[in-house]
Length: 197
Image (cartoon, rainbow, N blue to C red; front, side, top):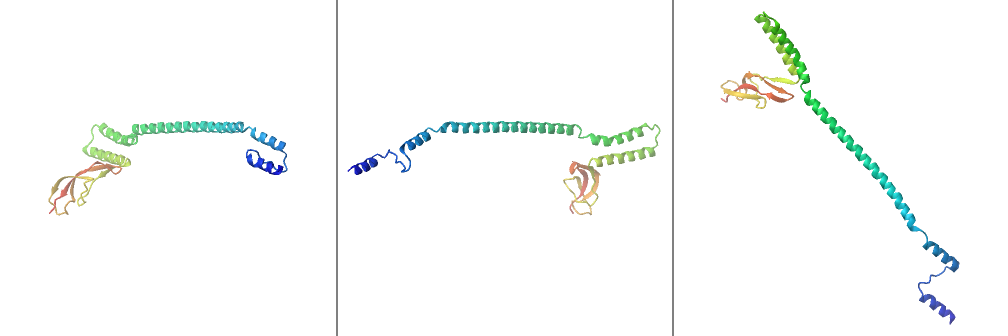
């Protein structure tokens, strides 16, 4: 009878923890109290504090990197603007420098008081050679199609169409040279073109 009552009491109280057979009830109660009183919150707060410090350090580092990158971009932009300004200001410097000998030749020719027509012609030819050389050094090239060359509307301007034995739409005569600079036409060549037969 006592045995059955004991079993009944144990089964009817599910809140009562079962004690291991080898551990006394006092030790179990002490272990349970120690585990329930373990300070989990201070440890979590400490971990959060460490994580917060890490994130703050990362934020400071990223802010520093951003400021450095912004300063570098600003310096690069300023340097580029200065270079563009210098390029605009001194774009014609080399061209002007190559024209100075032409000016010197013209002034020297005009300084001769009693120059003969032959001397003037020789001086003019020499000056023209200097001028053409200066233009070519700066990539200013003449467009001078020969008779029989195919008419190119990108480089030639037809003044008139004339009857000719040549094939139609070919250059018959050159009236004025054209010029290009670095593959860009400054002035098209003025030409006459063979009319269709």
